Length: 256
Image (cartoon, rainbow, N blue to C red):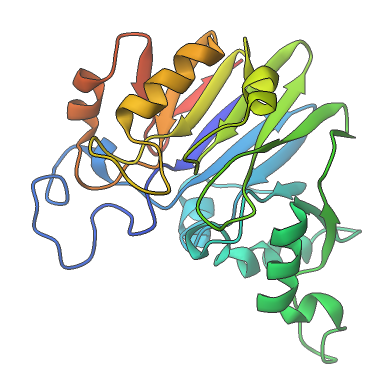
């Protein structure tokens, strides 16, 4: 299983427009953060997690030739407003692309992208999507996909756990709290990545201290944080986190 971090930033991205702070002006390429998205490759399949507004640029930067399926975590703009950038991939597929999301997120996607429920005007194209509600684990070409409930403000939020050939990966990019059932499902995975917005507290995101506490409960073989805002540089995050936890960054690729 290959994991590629296409974007690791918060809703503003880094640099943030109009900001002249040290992180936004940083020359370190690890401080250039698109909005969060993750690519998972296994069993000959390419699965995308979330469709941020930067998706077109991310696909071009990583020369992504195909996307076989998409998993959505929640309906906030920074995670779904690139949804229509799936269109060039679905145009090349024999069948509509399967997309899985929580019940509340499915409703939001149908409301925002209302073309999902009507045929295209002749001579035009639209993303061809088979939208599925994810309420239990399912298999996709030998990859076990498990939705992971999480608390993130008013969002109907889920993370995802993927398992293939004895390897496991869990990602919960936006969250404030994880219920016991989610902690249990994540415990001992090969790689886990969770939200860690900044050092100071936030009402709907975990800060560094909260993320470390959760990751210490999960006890994954490898632990990362994601969704960093412009208040902390990559190098600062690396120094603030304990040695067994690292900040992710755009372009990071991990083989499991």
